[in-house]
Image 1 (tube, rainbow, N blue to C red):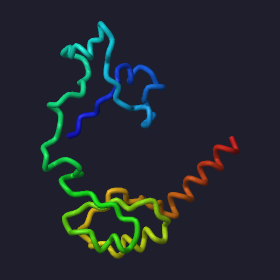
Image 2 (image 1 turned 90 degrees about the vertical axis):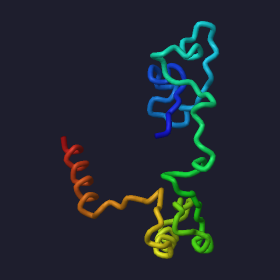
Image 3 (image 1 turned 90 degrees about the horizontal axis):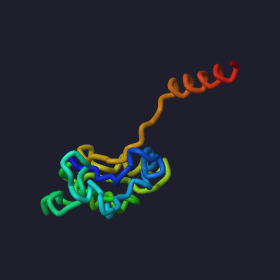
Image 4 (image 1 turned 45 degrees about the vertical axis):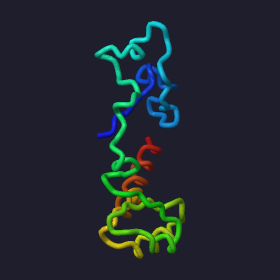
Length: 132
């Protein structure tokens, strides 16, 4: 499993990334008495050479090469052993791309469609809360 490196005090302060993905960037600890910089045993891990993946595993997700598909021409380039990320396209074009892809190809950013019953339950729950 991939190690998640978080910057010092990220768990303590919400402004440093607790629930904010963009702020969860790695910053090297540089303080004089910093325990993370000194690599004290009970402290979070610090980025170093030993955590790098093997050369044949780099850039892969779940052991599969990742291909970005933007249009129907890109679907032809996809192989069976690849995983697909469908680019920022609209619903109609996304459905066309999904139909053209081979069935055994994994789509990494598949949209979860809500059923009509779930949508109705959610809207009824909101109406009941507004009445209170």
